[in-house]
Length: 227
Length: 368
Image (cartoon, rainbow over all chains, first blue to last red; front, top):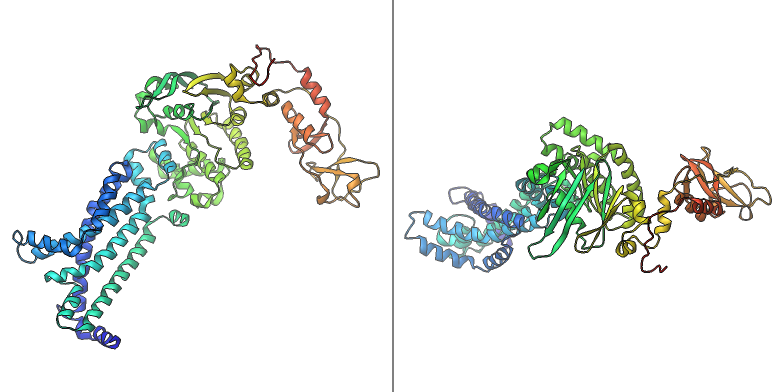
């Protein structure tokens, strides 16, 4: 079995072409980054607002908890059913898939950003205000830089979940690494299925590693030492 | 000069934190707000830079009503030091200290030069500038906090319990340095503390506040010790105030010549206590002839006596005399030995010194 998987992964024919591994990797990444970007677009400002003002904390905690319990596959089917009559072509399947992934990614990003801003030393925040920083300056010069480690961990855990879950786009006929799982199952090609799963895991780890490098570049060494 | 003019702070739930407070913190001096917890001292301090808005009354800095300025603008002109320093962990020491100059939009080089200058001033020159707050001790962080408050060259500085989170040994050193620094800079300072000893040591003026945010007494430290306004102030100022009041009294005390010995010397028979000095003439400690055989070494020294400064307070003389193992209090001029004083003679001087003349107010634990 293991050697069959190895053969599948090392066969150059499987890597090339419009439906090959490279092509599906790119599709998978595109879908994942699009979802993370949209989730961040919603969750980062919301998390900053709640962390900075302390308003709406209860809403976040409940919302984040509730979102985590949503079954991805169920949302996908409902979204497809609702949107199919309204959208045409591939969009009818892409948009629902993206919605599923965004819903999945919002809770970790939101809680990371909110918790990051909230855990900033109250003394540092007080000093910042006391020295004459405006609310916006406190946010951009003190709260966000200090929150970056937790913001990053929120983004990283969201991205891990997105990459793993983006496989379900294949269920509604889209590309991505999920294709190998679905197609492999359909043709009882277990080597292809296992190979596809390994690729998903490898991609998730690689992307997380890259995020880790970016975090080391962006986060102040003064914060890393305190940990 | 900072003037409180009938300032009251009433919170939304109706509690009155500060009640009709009026006093004047003189320019170039240290004014200390002191009192038990819940007396509104921190609230009063934070109303000066409008971190808290007064409900009634006004606060004037050099004649300008603080209410007439935008809060952020007002605060940039006022140094602000808080208990746990509140340094920005993600910024280097230098960049922390450059905060206010940057907010004031000074050019980079001027801000940097000024930051290095004030760091030098608080004793953190050299490569401290490049470190992060997490790499510093509590005392060093508080020095950076003071440097950061000084960087914008404010004429007024607010300090909220600046030394209370620091261990006692370091604290005392920091207080001494701070007094010297303040004397050199002439900044107008308002400081909050719960520690009456700190208030008396640092304050030129002391405002004692009582629960409910009312002013119990506003006076100089020696006056506060000599004439507490009422039972509350008397009990707050504490039991040792007679002794502490000696900090503010100076008088001529007879200084006896002391013939010192040096490490490596041998003591002759019958010599009891001898004072050991180093090559520069600075006192090292006492030795007792009965306990030493052979040439004197550093391990023979008996430490523990405090040193009085020539021309210093009577408290210093008395403490040196009482704490010395030989019964002879060591007096120094600079670091060098000037002579010794005897406890009975110091007491005699204290007895002869002019008494506080105001009406005597007794505290409950000292019935007439």
